[in-house]
Image (cartoon, rainbow, N blue to C red; front, side, top):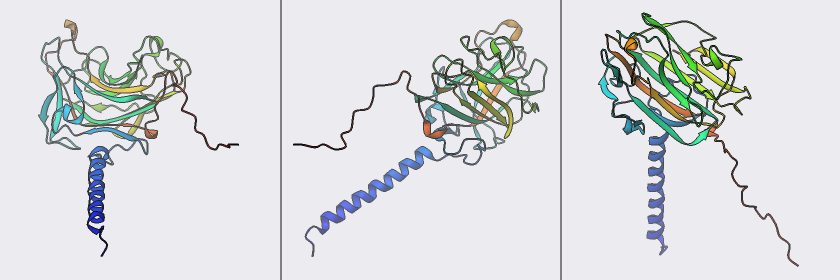
Length: 294
């Protein structure tokens, strides 16, 4: 009998336990609870987070900046309900809402975000941009928001680069091209209903190169597609939810509560998370492939 058999068996067991642990760890990190829902997510994208809001945002690695996110329950939530997160502006209030933040360790050339979302049935749009979620990075703070006005019972989604140092007047509306309205499909969805929202941004090479991409979908249908944008030239590293309801002027305060509900949030980095290096780092250490000695 091999005198080292117990030692070999012990090593094999240790390796087996390591592989099992590794597999569980990979599953925890990369499995999406809503796989198949995000139909416009680029193939092979690296998962950042996939949150079902069955617990607090922090349980998913999301920062609840002001601790104002409200855990709620909605049996109609279509993906992973009934657990949802709610953001509310109370009646006749100048302050309310929530700010959630999810960041990546590095700046990326691309970012994708999908979520299931609805308003309350009483929701009344403001007379200024109804901001919702941001995909942003150093020097750029663009957001996706509701395209509607006070009294509307339906809405669509628009994008604003929201950054004074950027000019997109060649392709979008208003001063400096601040408003990119739907340019593919202008259909509108009813407020109060669950809606699948997907967005994708590819950063432009520079602040003036006009080669960035901004796309968004509503219920799987492409609504906006801009392929000549200036945006995110220093990279994209943050998803933010904030309505910027703080210090609303009296004319924007409402006699009904305004609420947003999120059932599920999915964020990923396409192309394996290809980051950017601004400015470029030092060259790699040289590798000696062969050497000849006398």
